[in-house]
Image (cartoon, rainbow, N blue to C red; front, side, top):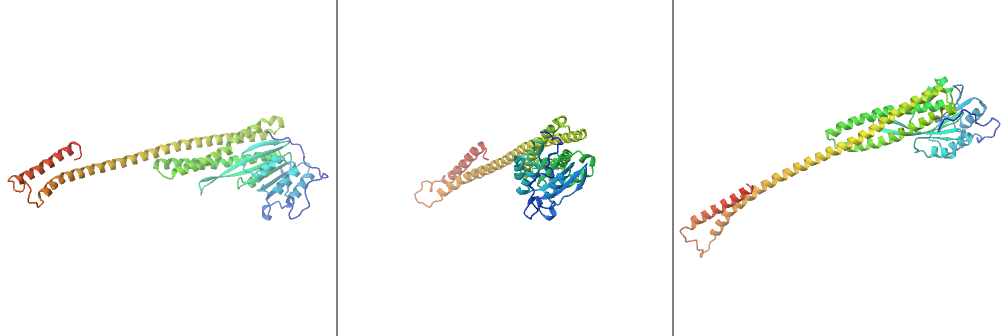
Length: 376
């Protein structure tokens, strides 16, 4: 997985090509600009680090590139149709597997070499402040000896800024398609910095919410953990990809200045990847702490409920005890209050004192029993 050598492999002017005559339904004849329709955002032809033309269609780009012996074409597309990609594949001899990946998108970041053409998949990211979430987009790049094709599936990155940068730096652009690939890599990696800052800020806020006992924090931790996993999948493969590029510096004669640039990007990617790994570990620890705090809160609530139930039981015991004590004299008085003629105690001289004494003994006995059992 290394950059190809600068061998000119495009078709000769007299060689038959796949470009059809311009027609409304011909993708190669589609205007090279989003303002007039089509997925071609911009097509430019460069020579010696400077723009020489901006062809109006793909077919015109193909023609001018064949006629320019030392030229380089950069064709930028946004969600292209199958016909447009097949037209580019036929013109630049792109491998069918790479073209299929570019059509379907949803690819992992990777760098693959097909002959003298490199196929690079990148995952760009941007932090959306309003939604407090990370938006990911996919970028496919075909790098050949004298052409570079970018296929975007999403809003990021801003390749118009990359164009302006390389066009304002002719000495960099003169190094060829590899220099443009570097500029794209550098822009994608630099775009990770605001995302890192945004995720770090979210983690700080989550830590505060966890110890504040916010009930919605668990959901936010889960959502941010998913975004961090996606961020990790976007950044971690870049480390291996850039080391693969650096491994081919000597073999493919990469310019020394470009080597320095790519090493700098590799350093930034490594730093970003380490930060993202740290985020995932931090979120795992925060989730564990949050689970512990939730468990402690639930235990405290259960303890409070248990204490409330215990107090309620104590009150019920007291009420029941006094009800039993009061029920005893009521029972005795009820029995002796019945109007029957033949009751032995009705005409007994000591009947009244006996009844009163009986009620006192029963009440005292019940009071002593309940007191010993701590019901009173």
